[in-house]
Length: 240
Image 1: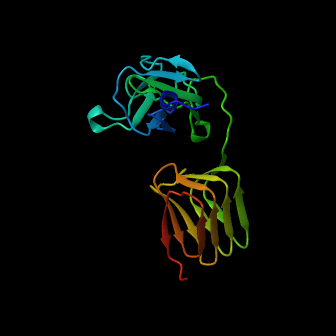
Image 2: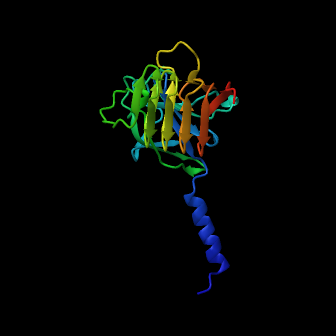
Image 3: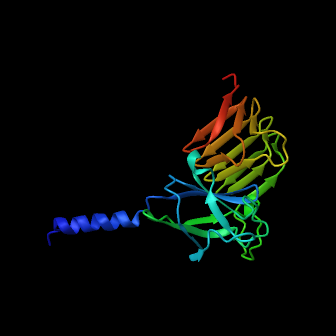
């Protein structure tokens, strides 16, 4: 059967309606509040929030969730903060889950995507009774690999809190994984991966990113990064 132009137009309209124009791109936990980032920030107004598919008030008042733009409207917000009043108080005593799904209905824009989040490994603690499974392998303190040791992180979500030192002839291989780095107890602003003269760092098909500051790789040895969209700052000190 022939597809009429009208039918084509209808299909296009339907497709347009199912692809959200405004997308939630990130949900993060810091300073005891939740931040939600969008691909672009539309006009602010009477939005509706759905958490785990259930409508939750965005102006719950003190002790309940309160959701507002992360900057003054004239400063071009990029997303929302979830906290409570007096603005901006932390979620520690607020019943808001550390994992689940979140979605917004925005006037004139329709529904955003439904974004799945789990912040329990990133320190999220609220008054919610919802149990959230741990997804990340966590290592606190510097990760030091020495001698001829080879450490392989494969098919993992690995949270490293502190620097990484690859000494001597040691190797660190990261494959099909996510490596998140943060300072842990370090006083420095950034986190570092130090690769000694005869040591090796290999990153394959993985995501390496900082949770705070920058990830800096100081390479005196051998580093190879393939098929990995890393957000690292790379300093090559090797003699090669």
